[in-house]
Image (cartoon, rainbow, N blue to C red; front, side, top):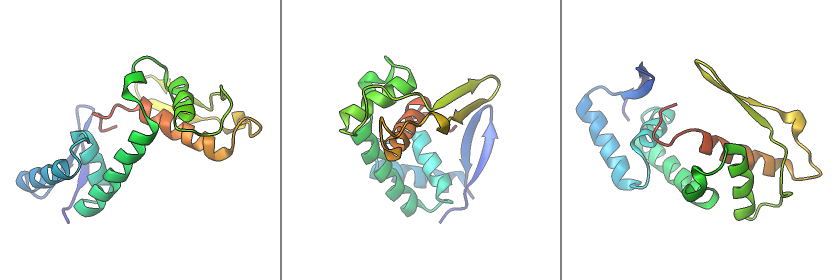
Length: 149
């Protein structure tokens, strides 16, 4: 495995490997294995797996499959993140009321913070697992696939 660590430069996070050549080889291998992933996604998953390319590829494949089952890029620009998340719940067949109360708030100033509001969860409208799925879809919508945030 490659020794990977986060290094911040101008609001971008990059992977630092023992050599630029090693980093390029690993990223290219990941791109070949998961071509529908973005460069930033490959970097994030590699860092998350401490440079273990096999684990990163396995995890990335599962994420891309989850994303294809639960997200729709055609609607991405049209809707705010919570509305998008609740509409995707209905498209993927999750049992939920038409409108779920928003259980998150995003604070954007110099740094972006996402605040989870569990007191707004109403289990008469949907199961807790449905709210968890909505939160995951919300976060996927909120964070740009090309970002290392």
